[in-house]
Image (cartoon, rainbow, N blue to C red; front, side, top):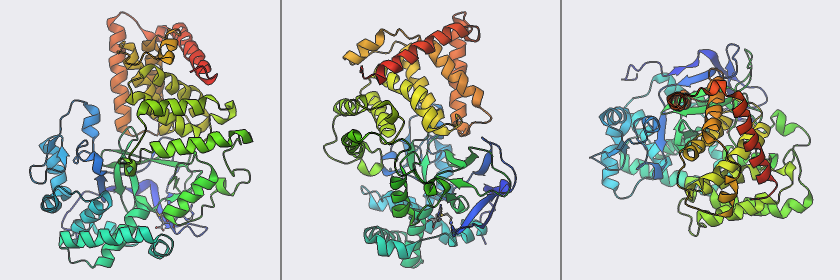
Length: 501
Ligand SMILES: C[S@@+](CC[C@H](N)C(=O)[O-])C[C@H]1O[C@@H](n2cnc3c(N)ncnc32)[C@H](O)[C@@H]1O
């Protein structure tokens, strides 16, 4: 029996597990009709949630960054024992100490300055908590039944199996748990097959998350639900109407990618061939819109650039990454020469995201705003037709944050042609900001973003409204001017797409 009489950590009343048709194993099914934006599932206590190694010094291991996002100035304090994990304050520290850090702190100390890789830290936590009977029995049972695909891993990816085996040896040696090494390896395989990217309220990856109930959800490239995190709480929200009895499908991979890429990733990472309605539909071989053959070179170049920019933690130490400025120039060159039908297809959608990131890194806020506006007005409505899609909301937030900086007349460090040229559109960034936030606030209640995101939007909108009021203005009565400002932003977007920058 569990020693912790924990409150029920899962609220599955809207879902029920069952055997899924078509050989998908088990799945989760809607126990009731669920409207877009409503919670399908909310889990307040993870089975395990761990930060990426490079985030350990930046993100609080107690609230997993939730309080930091609410208050930018929060300084973290290191654990005085291991000095590896950091916290906002004693409250966050006490929470993590009680959950698992009390079991692992001495192990981290002994290993210092080495830090166990993320998967090993996750397996260590699960093994230690299991052995101390810290998990509720129903979670233990669900975890026991999770798929491992160990046979597939051993046959198809010996390097992955070797990684899991080495990691389980290390966990066994450092933790001193009684568990057999094979059992620890199965934990490792379960983690690889069933974990989610842990993201913050702005959907940036910060680590790994696993809960055996949430892991019951199967994949479809034509998904009906989306996953998000607010600190260590998991939210699954309906992205379209789900009828009672329907299977809940999420996407395990970036479904904006063409079918061959999606299938490759699903095969290599999850060991199945996707037969969802989208994958089975003829004519989805590549991007929905095939570009002319002469764009093949651009495509190759775009994928090469993307592989150099991958924000995946494994690429952190990749040597010879181009300086962000060169990167921005290289990406701009590829994007400038695209036929209009290609801008809303991959790999160019991701490439523009990387361009915006590279411009931000160089503090080239005006150029970043221009490309964020292209994304907001042209790319996202085509790529994510549902305006409540969390990625679309986060992109709107990015545009709003850039408008804040520009409305404050932030120092432009780069006096390049594009920055100077953008000046001539004379955009009133405050009004654009107000309108982008107003639209975000209007979606609340049916949006698929997590509560923390909605809190950030609401907070900023309140501030912006107060600033307008202090200046004696009410943007609700400035519809004509707002339309005019969006006209300017539209012309700026045309100008970018005409390859003028
Ligand atoms: C996270 S688990 C999902 C729950 C799983 N069906 C079970 O019974 O435990 C992921 C595994 O489910 C199966 N799966 C998920 N989505 C699938 C799909 N669309 N087609 C075929 N198999 C799928 C694959 O075996 C995959 O490795």
